[in-house]
Length: 161
Image (cartoon, rainbow, N blue to C red; front, side):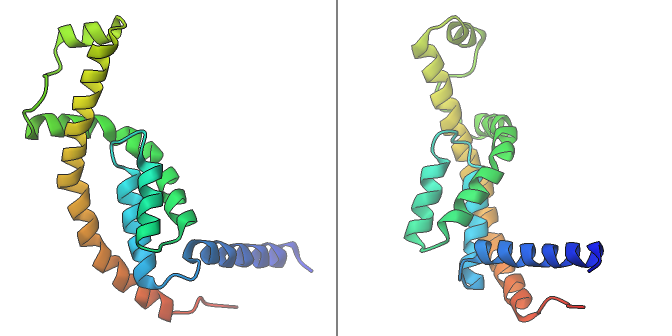
């Protein structure tokens, strides 16, 4: 057997295995919901709770837990990258809580636990508000489109040689 033929067969088997693990018997509707909820939850600016939220969503909507957690973890770099922009957008949209001032930052940096928790708490609340206004509606808009695409894709068999 030629090495090129073996590599193609291994790649094809790997793709089928990955597809099976990802779908896990899910319908296109459930897979689209898994992708939308998993990604939206994964980029939520809540650094400590997205794993629990993903597990809760998967349980409530009877989705694939593995796929939800995989999406959650794959989105972690994006979550970190978007945390500050969500905080800034939240500051522009919501004028609640203390403003980030030099005094608050200095206190937080010098070990004043109360000042640090206050700063992080209000920044997180404003960031989650910005996330709710931007990402949650986007996920609701993408879901029907993704569902239609997955239904069409399901009807198309991969080309075999």
